[in-house]
Every structure is written in C-alpha cells, then in structure tokens.
Image 1 (spheres, rainbow, N blue to C red):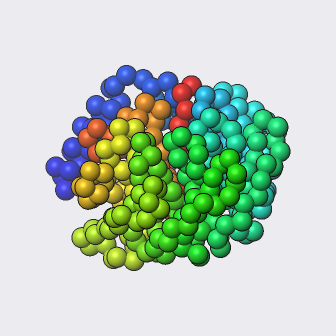
Image 2 (image 1 turned 90 degrees about the horizontal axis):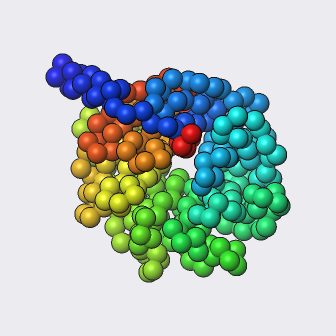
Image 3 (image 1 turned 60 degrees about the vertical axis):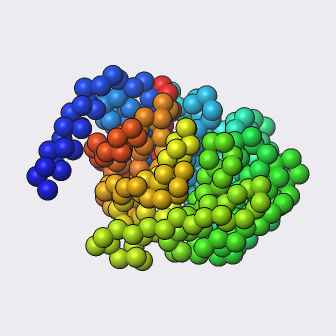
Length: 323
C-alpha cells in the first residue's frame, strides 16, 4: 500500500510540473444546483455558476464558446458563455431533460426526455423545436455517429438502443441490450457503438452496419460485489484503441482494449463514479464522483489516477474546453 501511495504522489508531482493546459473544466452538480468551473492547469475552482435546478447532462459547442446544461427540474437547457459565464437565452428541452448530445456540426441538439418517452430535437441557433421523436420507456442515454447521420437513444425500461435517422427523425433500427442502458458512445471510426447497461452490468458492443450486438464486455473486480459493478458513462480515445467505462458504486473506471474488448485494468477513483470526459487534447480523462463530491483526473497514456479535486455537491456531468 505504501508503494502504491508513493507512486501516486510521484505521478501527481510530475503532472503538476508539466506544461500548463489552457483549458477549463465544467462540472454539473446535481444536488448543489451549480456548475463548478476549474482551471485546467491548476485544478483550482475559479468560478461557480448558480441559478439552475438539478443540473445533470453537460456539453459544449464544438468551438468551446458555449456550455449547455440539462437543468432537469427547470425543464430547460441552460446556456452559458464559457469565458464570461454569462447566462445566454435558454433552449426548450421538453420535460425533465437528463442527457443530450450535439450533432457533430454543433447543431441541432438531441435531448432525452425521460418522463415523456421522447427525444426532443432543438435548433440551438433559432431555439426552436425541430422534432419530437417517440422512443422507448424512460429514455436516457444519447449518442451520435461521427458522420452525424444517426443519433442514438437508450431507453432504460425498454432496454433498447434506438437508432434515429437525423434527416428524417425516424427510428431506423432498435437493438435489444441488457437491463437499464444508460449511455451510448460510438468509436471514432463509427464501426462500433458501445451501450452501457447499469443493472445488466455489461457494455454491449453493437455493429451499426448489422444492428446487432457482436460482443458484451463484462466486469469483475476482486472484493467488489457483482451488483456494485454498474456501467454508466463510456468514452473512447481519439485513436480508438481504448475505451473507459465508469462503474458507478464500484468506484472504479474500467480500461478496455478495443482490439479484443477485454478489460485490461480497473482504476480506483472517487465514490459512485458516473460520467467521463476527456481534456481537449485527449491526454487526461476526468471522472465525476457523486458521493465523494469530487472529480478524479486520469493520465490516459499511463492509465494512472493522478489526483482528485473537490467540486460541488453530487457532481454528475463534466466537459472540458480550451480557454
């Protein structure tokens, strides 16, 4: 244990001594009703955005200028300037927005509305609703193909991934996955779609060309009960070689080799790790740890947890942008 602790201290010192990153990290705090802003170089809290109710999903425009927040109890998507933190005109969201995804072009925004079993499509420039797409029961996860032709919604109770054509707003395929799917993430080349199942305890690897599950990633951590292994957030590196999976109350992030779909490591982070985001340069992965009220910072090259930083109450989502 002493050797492991010493290694973490060395990694933290090396990280702190590295070149400064011109970035900001935005963390939505579900219970605190705030968004914490951290300096990407020092990891110090530099601002707290207030005035929203139950913020969960969070993302940024492709140019990093705008931050979008699912304010679930406000029934709005709140929009902020990433430099000044000024609140900009909100977007309609449908009821209880939880997660969303932007088209790769930056417009439109696709929002999961859990209470009404729809995906709301919103033009971020005109602030108009373009479509409401009926999906399965309790829609949650959202993902989009790299070419922007397909948007994916996962329905927690129906246990399906719904593939929606972004030009017609029609469901073109439904793929059955394991219980309570929470997140959808394509590989950068678009060849695979990863869908996490919180209660099923798996990540389904779907071939979008076949609309079939071609592999299931499973998890096993010594000393951790199987029911605590609850996959939620998923991210894939830009080179497509590794996937990271947040395992909820297991307090671990699984590292997956995408060539074999085998887990190569489990990284101990904070309590109830929920969502994940890469730094703009892809060198670091940030995790939100809801029960320890912090984020963990992982070095992607070495798969080492460098440090944890306190944020607001019950952090849920995270996004990082160049500043």
